[in-house]
Amino acid sequence: MPTELDFEKPIRDLRTKITELHELMAKSGVDLNGEIAKLEHRMDDLSRDLYEGLTPWQRVQLARQPGRPTTLDYIHGICSEFMELHGDRNFRDDPAVVGGIGLVEGKPITIIGHQKGRDTKENIHRNFGMAHPDGYRKALRLMQQAEKFGRPVVTFIDTAGAYPGMSAEERGQSEAIARNLRVMAGLKVPTLCFVTGEGGSGGALGLGVTDRIFVLEYAWYSVIAPESAAAILWKDSAQGPRAAETMKISARDLKELGIADDVIAEPLGGAQKNPQQMIATVRKKVIETLDELTRLPIAELLAARYDKYRDMGTFVER
Amino acid sequence: MLKELFHKKRHYATLGQPATRPVPASDIPKGLVDKCKSCGAIVIAKELKKHLFTCPHCGYHFAVDAPSRVELTLDEGSFEEYDAGVTSVDPLSFPGYPDKVKKAQKDTGLLEAVVTGRGTLDTEPVIIGVMDPRFIMGSMGAAAGEKLTRAMERAAETATPMVLFTASGGARMQEGVLSLMQMAKTSVALERMHEAGVLFVTVITNPTTGGVSASFASLGDIILAEPGALFGFAGRRVIEQTIRQKLPDDFQTSEFVLEHGMVDQVVNRKALRDQLSLILRVHARKGWTSAD
Ligand SMILES: [Zn+2]
Image 1 (cartoon, each protein chain N blue to C red):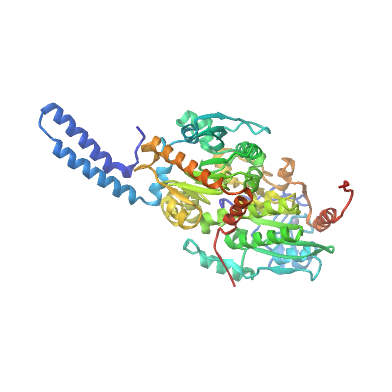
Image 2 (image 1 turned 120 degrees about the vertical axis):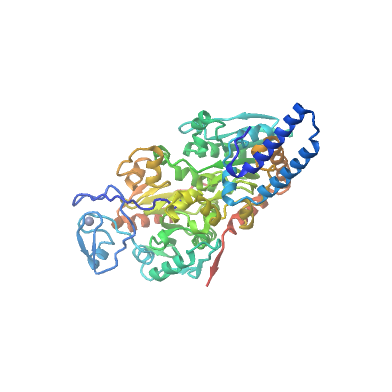
């Protein structure tokens, strides 16, 4: 059972009450079905209202919930067969980024993504999905390999950010991310990315210059994590909720700002409530989008990709 | 990221030694006299300019505003500015942002944090971009991204080499994810330049961090850096908090990143023009070419 957040308490309370009524009915033999149905109806209404009206900060909390599908979960749900490929051929294999080759409906694909752990031990191994340059260079190698063999690239973005560590700097975190941005711009195969949880700044963008950008309903994508923004703006990282609002980092905002091509609906209450449903939705989107993108000649695809990024951002000219 | 742009703790090198650690870039010489941030010497403004805004005593490199940098770099009178009227809007209705921009404009006389244009350097044609560290810490919003992209597009179309002086705390937080996307936008334009075989040179000046460091600053065919400039992705304090240990004083300086293979040369400002001239001449000359 995934852990639940404070703001989900009213739903949890109702669910407990319903369970109690079931138990009572079993014990006493009194028919409580009418009562139970009423409560279940109320719970449905409450859930819909609650999740519909989430604040940006509550969405950030949902995006960070353990139990959400990770990149490897998506990969294995999307591909009928998959083989993970390791290492950047420069220094090491970064466990915070995974990637490899597989088949979707019999068609070849390369999938790459940030990988968070499912528990504390794995999270430490995965560095909480915060990549070193080696991770971005592994991704680069796999993307160029995909280009050589003409298969599309799908990336999954879920990182608080690129790892801010000493060795990461020594090995060129900046260079690794920058190179990915440029190479992805010119990659001669269809590319798409899903922001599945956290889209933390340059560390997210390092896998995210693609023909299509899809953002899951409760995911966020920002130039800076809300807590860090709050620390700079108001000298108080506890003001994350306020920053989440100000920075317009929710999926709907991203669509309005022209960054997200589509917002991918999550199961009620978030992907962690029904991972299988979430993975199926994403799989469908992958297939639909690749069907669409492969109808275009590569030159047109690249021209459209150029224009997509060329048009980002608003300014005035005096 | 805009986190931790400048170090709080200062390190004063002994007289005659270059600084081993970058010092804040916020103090561009303004008055008649200025105090060297490295050796503490009092320097007369005229003298400082004669030394290309480096300390005559210790060689410390003072920050240079964009107009002065253009003047130091290009042949006299050759500069034609591009897109001077492009300026920021406030896409997120971010509290206080319009005032911040207005103040920066008033303080600098510029409309944006980057100046672009074309000119010649030792008669070689060049497209130039200069980020101004005075303008909201040289941060990149959509206006700066647009100006740089247009300059890169002109470079690609006209096969003119481009030299870009970077000085930036990174993406401009007040424009949210749109500022992050300027990293992608400029990189997409650089891929066009790359495909067209057009030379792109970056000169890293103090400080170059965050989103600017992790995009065009690191994408030069040749990357030069001024001595003592801060060049890195994450801020010092963030790293120290993450790894729970003190970083060496020279961490992320030009000299440090040279040693780690991230830049081609650390070049003293007094030698910079000649080095850029050589790079441009090497790339302008037809030489040995294989038969068709
Ligand atoms: Zn000095």
